[in-house]
Image (cartoon, rainbow, N blue to C red; front, side, top):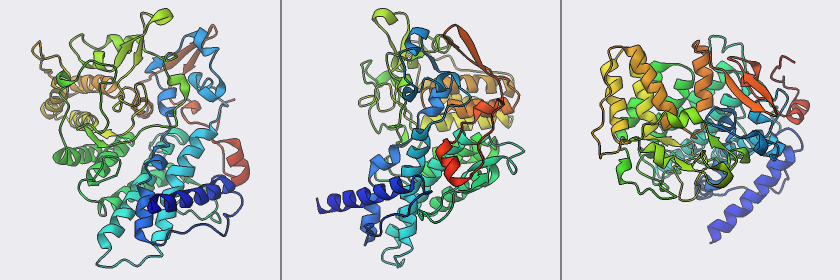
Length: 458
């Protein structure tokens, strides 16, 4: 109880500091800031799970896994994500920016700053390293999410494209300056590689990062960079440590099929900062996406739920990997299923067709209704294998916050994917590589910091 009270007091004073400086850019924090006086205090702050669930659902809001009826759209407020739904060129989200910077970047930086006040000894080295590794992982995860929203996708122009502000200290005296996209990804990878040397192979709880979780996040990060050799390498390292899949035949077809911390979960992360345009009964699953699942594919029954009443004939998402608490929420953690798809894609791109299809078949067999023999996928070319893998990637990772990043990299490869919304009798189109694939930074942050804003055509 004493520990809980101490951490709550620490969080209150740190929160007041974070709010007063408004993303580090205004007044200095109060001088009476509570300072942790032991490594146990810092570990308790790292264990305060709610701080590291301020992940944003924005990548899912912007993507094409769902739609809302026009009649429903009129009842949605701007705070619910109404204008983001059709990629309004001027819309901004303080909620997304602040949620990631003021929690998932700020608090790890507090811990990293305070660690410098403690001497590392032979007796405390394991604890010291674990705390530092956790803070670096959380910060890298936040920077990765920010990069998917607020800077261009990683391309040949990464050294000159504008990236995100890389806050690496909690000090408010340090000004916020935008890095390049190259520097952004270099920082993410450097933090993760440093964490890799500090964290244990497995964590006590899936909410805590481990070496295996670092492998998974490195694979995800390199995939978004289209560095498929490195993405495949780290997916492989991840699966060599944790590779179990859930046989979906063992899951009851009830209203909450997926339990928290199931055996596929390598790292548990949930978007508590979810815009309600995605909530039931507003959001309906894209019709073509739903129809792409075979009737013998158990994901069709476990991921989606038939809507009723005026919505009959449509389907809503109900397959969150913590559906016992968040039925149609956004789980954006790392799973073995994602890693099988990452490795399979990288194998296919490297021309290793047999290995690619072996991974894909392992995954899909665990998803297939065993009342009928699983139809093993075979193909004659790596290109055909890649197309099958990418289709299954979308079907497996629906509502995981990953589709937006995938679309951005696919369009850099010339796939020319247009997104469309129909609102109030008007068709809105987001063409490939349009400036709206990058969000606007909130104006108040731009005005205080003097940082350049992301451009718009109009």
